[in-house]
Length: 559
Image (cartoon, rainbow, N blue to C red; front, side):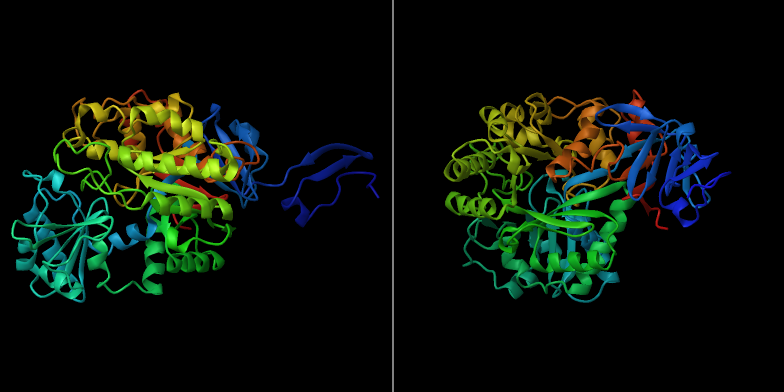
């Protein structure tokens, strides 16, 4: 029965749904349910529609209103979390479409060799770390010989002098090469007579002795002697990486390469509601699931494969020899026939295939295999509905760009690779091949779906650096105007789209992630400055993340 006078009585329901109010038997208005989160005094920027308002409101994990500050006022109640953005910018939550969470978490616990300007500095950093961490293997990450004056690979002799009988293994910045000391090689049983494994290379000196450097699959010869991390180690690594990612403004990471143990830890963390970050998983080929599966924040529906190595260690497979190493065309890490079998198995299971390909020969191997499987299994060369991806697409032969479009593939790229590789890449592959390197502009022009990430910890997980790189093709640490490579820079709209809508599409979530739009999931990255409308690209480098919102919940700063 409707009350004759006044309002209908609403109690708990007021906070659950709109409550109708009547006067004199007639409905005259309604009181909307309160928002759980409101941001005001902001620049709300959608990658499709542009600037769409100054405020938005969130309820039940979804966006319910985008508009003016006045539009959201009626949804603010005492328990509503209200943020005054003070003119900052609100973006759809930023994704990293290609990262390695566990490696990031572990890197925080290992010797930091990033940016070492010489072999001596690398060894000194490792030795200093060893003093503070006295037990077990000495592990380090992120040295890069391209930063050194002679630009040559290191040898184990200096590391031996600093580490003695303690085994040490220091991984190159790209994760595709490592330096072992003599003690590590002895434990691993590697010596003069050890042969290169398929897909790998042991660097040896003129006398035939190993120098200590192992390329791509040869790294496994040493890694097999290193005790595997336990479940507690993996859990700690993922949680540490999650904290770092959320602080950088990331709401989702496409984790590129999960073994069985990794999958088990992530599933447990998800069940226990310890995941605040969204994780879109790619299983390693030998750990592929029988079918896709999804939880709350962790989803596994993709498989990661490797076609070749990396450019910095000259393991990327090239159609012609390296310009600075005429006897070397790089390494293929999988045979064509084996790759076709893997791709067919993914198609049979309904799994997305995401293949690492750096060199132009590596990319062509992927394109050829995808085309073969599409023809054999589906009778067509184009299957955009599968959303199979090529990870990196770093150097592509001119004739092959159109094949990405023809096959219906997604280009998953990392803008910071261009700026970190820029000082040495032209010498490595020559100016002619640079025309097809780091060429996300060509993919945009061909309307090929583009998803951006960083490949962290190869590069920094900070998405601001990726945005700046795509906008400028310049080193953020340099004050000059030198651009790396001949590629086209992107607009702000194109760049933000690749980190949001493009990444969401690459994860089959374009209908609920990656937009600031009513009824979309409330994943937000909020910066203190509106760098989107600033004419100076460096403004993005000075902006700070003030909130990372995942599913309508404040994930950074931690509650």
